Amino acid sequence: MKYFIVTGSSRGIGEAISKKLLNTEHHLFCISRQSNSSLIAMANAENVALDSIEFDLNDVHRIDELMQTILRRIDESNIESIYLINNAAIVKPIEHIDQSDSNEIIRHMNINLIASMLLTSSFIKYTDHLNLDKRILNISSGLSFNLKPRLSCYSTSKAGIETFTKSIGVEQEDVKIMAVRPGAVDTQMYEESIITDEHVHKVKLANPSYAADRILTFLFDRFEHGKVVKGW
Ligand SMILES: NC(=O)c1ccc[n+]([C@@H]2O[C@H](COP(=O)([O-])OP(=O)(O)OC[C@H]3O[C@@H](n4cnc5c(N)ncnc54)[C@H](OP(=O)(O)O)[C@@H]3O)[C@@H](O)[C@H]2O)c1
Image (cartoon, rainbow, N blue to C red; front, side, top):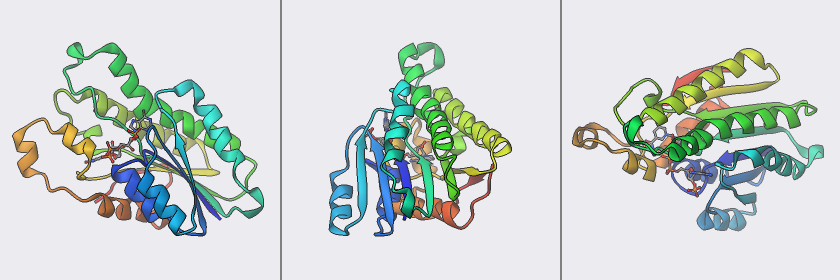
């Protein structure tokens, strides 16, 4: 059995990734604040093990406990590999930094960066005794280096996840880690992040299914430990 922990599975890219992973040889743990009834129905119809976990990743002090709870549900007598996909993120606040609410800035960094760091830490710690293929895939963005006014929190959190990925790549050997920067994808986040008309007219949007295929190609076939790569 292959185990997958996917954050942000209620919609967008995370939902598309989770749907592509539905397979009777896979067991999915899907984390988001809202559960995804269509994903759960598909898993039930296809007889796929899927645990839907309603959890707010802003609740960073409970993340270690969350990972322990997930890993306790794994059947260690029948495990081939385990994957963590840190996909959940938010784009707000979309505001000049001096106009941004401090709680929104903290929430942003918690969800986009701290939660992924803590999930990574707990994942490595509690799978240490398992001698098998263990991979972490972090979803970044080209906005980590392509900087725009009013998106400083997003760019900073994505630059942070990229540096974190490279750092863990240098530090860890047993667990493999990489980050992918998807291109623009037609999701709620993309809608929320439109800040100029030029942005709307010039960008070619991929659909979430295409994005999920590209991302999973990196996870399974083109994994490069410690690297940050462009998705397409
Ligand atoms: N769309 C693009 O053009 C694009 C481009 C480059 C990179 N990306 C990256 O791709 C990833 C997915 O983005 P998307 O476009 O699919 O976004 P999306 O449609 O807005 O979906 C975001 C997901 O994250 C979850 N999430 C948000 N806040 C959460 C919280 N506090 N706790 C738990 N889960 C939370 C949401 O679930 P709930 O609301 O149910 O909690 C949702 O499932 C992100 O890392 C994003 O930065 C997107």
